[in-house]
Image (cartoon, rainbow, N blue to C red):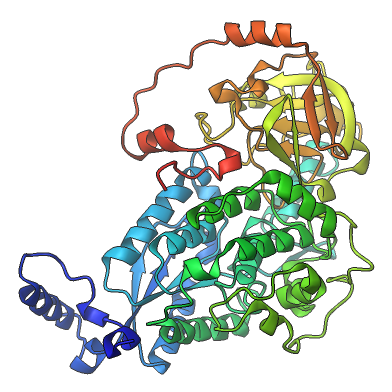
Length: 567
């Protein structure tokens, strides 16, 4: 390795093309000097820091302080830290849904990593779609990279109990809809659910992706669960900056060398053991695809049968991410899974996953949080894929978060043709619905106008909620928040908007779900379905431009990660 490769190219990397390289270097140095850099600073290798701070992203409001810690680490290790902004996706501040813009963020981040003179990069993300987008970008750009997550928020308090976004958000909202609490109390709860910086306090999508990033080896050990407001989060940021400098010039620790097929399988194991977010199935599929790895949902089922749920956290258990951090975090789970994992996978530390697992734990394992394999929270993995006449290419069920009786169920379909239809009729007192019926939402998948929002958590009709109904089988081509729970079938592929079988369901049809058999079937004869298929209206012609057009023309289905076909 040459000295330039070892130290990085620094400010001389990737020169702007004017047809005169020496002029380009001269001009760049001149403009860099306008920012006050000294000759000594400009001689250092550059660590770019992708900063997703935004006034529209509450999860990231502590990033200015976190950024300074990353810079400190880079400087301590002899590099020059240079931050750059990227798109930031604040989950609840985007319309129609954050997933529509995940690929845009991934593309923008990838291109800025490629285009700017960066020898290594620290990726600062946290909120649901930001970490998947950054991991996708890192794999496509294939520059030395360290993922630094925001960390979970701390819990609030209400009437003597802890509250954390957003499982408790949904729990109290369901109680409000059922008439169990009044307007004054729901407003009080609203102000106590999310009280600090950081991502949701439970094992939602953000925390799931943080655990996956650590398991993949692209984030530092123990980093996934450190609370956003904990001093260790700043120390982790500093260490991430130092580690990014150490990666400069590496030939064996690039993202595509770390994220192998074996590493992806390790990540699936972690997802199942923490009973993580269903969204992670879409994201991990897209991440694998960027690494040239095809995901087989049947393989997911086999892993799920072998991998018990070990982590007692909401929405599946009773605790919060701050408890997970104190109780051992990802390293404790990895130790429990050791014999199921590929231990030779590389990590950004330079050590293999097996070497990291064999190191002594910093924290004593709290067995009320991280269970031993012999005494799991649930003997089966948290997620499972189902197939059948209603989902030929698969659908996802978070079985650990459902009422067990509903995992083997046959019922009558109550169909909503769109989100607007759902909003208009779900609480209609005259809605023909009973507790054993199956709620079906159509036209909420990737190609729909809704762009696959977190709408799969269909509310229990108000008149049933008022009678104490807490769970029903609900089926859609949408997603649901990782903080949600219930007997919910998601990501049905192919989706209704492109004429998938979900589009053919009518009120009164019988639907059978069997998680044990991995089946989801529409119990209607083929001749009737063919007649319905022929009667489907042509999709309306919509004039599109810009990113909306790019998305519509190139987005893939859920089983392919909802990535773009050209990525």
